[in-house]
Length: 130
Ligand SMILES: Cc1cc2nc3c(=O)[nH]c(=O)nc-3n(C[C@H](O)[C@H](O)[C@H](O)COP(=O)(O)O)c2cc1C
Image (cartoon, rainbow, N blue to C red):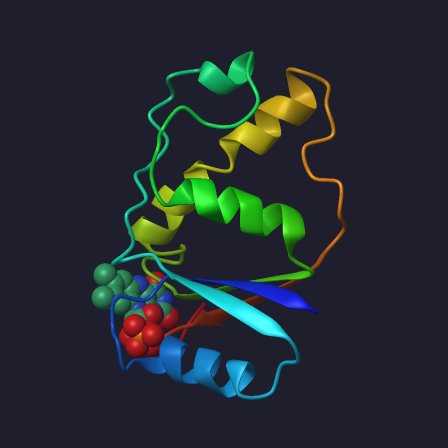
């Protein structure tokens, strides 16, 4: 079964990002898991450097399940409002936990994720944009 991980960077439960996510989840095949970054139990990376030498992450929180889902999934969708032309703060917090994959690849010279995936991004803005 196809698995899709969706990282939702919006704090607004009925906002623009969520309405676009709802449109996608209404059409995709297989299962999906949405990480609601403003309400989940995932701390930012603390730069403890455990992953410089060890597989995984020393912080024992909801991200441990997400690491597993990242290994298994076929698709990853990042969906976020723009805040000051960036992803939102909580989404960056969650994203910082991907540092373990960077360290695996570039410090420990391991292949951190075996299964290849498709990626997509939705960015929602409110101004005229630049
Ligand atoms: C703190 C903050 C910063 C923002 N910065 C930008 C920006 O740089 N560019 C932009 O187009 N919209 C910006 N916006 C507007 C939001 O991206 C816009 O309202 C968006 O539709 C909100 O998405 P949501 O309803 O899914 O939460 C900002 C909004 C906030 C609250």
